[in-house]
Length: 377
Image: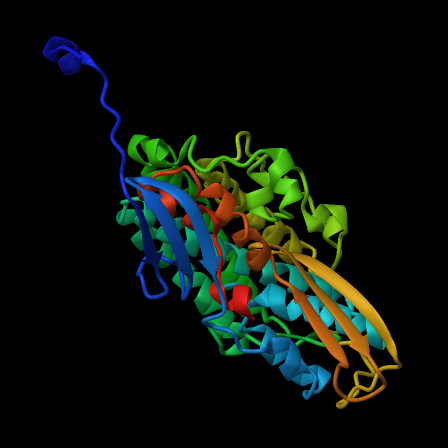
């Protein structure tokens, strides 16, 4: 080859393969998660999520605790959205115990779960901004989130792990003062949603970092068993509140936001859009809050259901959360299995990150919106 030809010929650069650990203590990994990344230059060739650092053996603990005591365990799964955790266990236990929940308790449960969805999605909104380089939205999100936690503290004394939804109903009734405070918050919160879109959703830099990144097709999303905003971001219209209503959700008017391309931005904006829908649901729950008791009659202090099994699932903040219970006539469940959406949603990372750049890892991981307490249980 002549010197002139060599100078103009395209060069092929070959890089060495490198294995690096992302986590389990990395500040951007959204909890104690380790991802083993194999990279060639800046391109990821293999990604292996490694879970179990936070394992606490919830299912085994339930086998030596009474049905009432198991509710406490549920708070520790998705600890930033504990109300749906309380609810799904109670629904499964109520089926096996034959308990009928009063209408007032159902409406309060709906209001609490939707307020918790607001708090959870605000946490996602703020931290995902930081993941992609925007710090200011975090300050806005936590300002509003604190107001919701104040409402929870006002009704049950807790701000994170509530143990509020109980077998047969709820711990205590809501007062007129609490309802007034809740309405006041909702009126304050609605204009903030437009601020969020201005701050982050349609920020050109944020859109460049998330649109077209980490796309999941409808078929792939279904095949991997995704749920929640991760499934709806790909355009699949599935929400447990519509598909299999519980607590009277079929009586509420709300829409299901859907994405188009299944990108990081689609998953993000599905959650932001759900904020508006949750506000609508809470307002309806307060408007038609029925009179009557907040707890069913005949709830035993030490329930011992007849041998049998039951399954219940809810649309939790991170997806389809299910509980399978088996009773053997004793005071503790014979078996309890938790179908946690974060654990299932996390699995797709191994496919989603392959072929992407290292700089996209945290943007993709953040868009999946996992909580490790729910992954490891």
